[in-house]
Length: 187
Image (cartoon, rainbow, N blue to C red; front, side, top):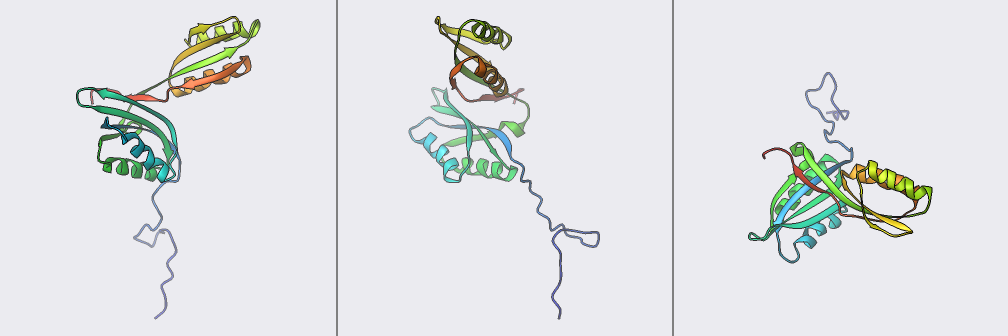
């Protein structure tokens, strides 16, 4: 009996789709993880990412329920849809994790980040930095004769755009909080 010669993939004569149906496109996802507020939980969650070679783009953590001792970890990571699903499944199996939400998939969400920017300069550069800060609705939170510290809140893209415009004007230091996010609507 001769061996079957089956080509990979389906054709008009085949009833089976033998092509893999998963994507290799990297996408950014915002994950909200509600955990018990106890020592070592953050290390376990972060260990899941580092142990499997997943990168964290942004990370914020804060207690959300003082009486219930719960915290919310907001993680922005990149990966293929299969990798994101794997991350969510593995996060859900960690014992002190109560909820895992993919805000990117769940629907519209509000994402905000806080940035502090120290800009040094004099003369026209100083005036231009103040003008741009006004356009971006950034607040001056500290001022000396040589520098300003601007505070700006908004979507990560807005923070990135502000940083790019401040670089040629004397940007010397940046501090960013990372993304805080909530899903929109009643759910």
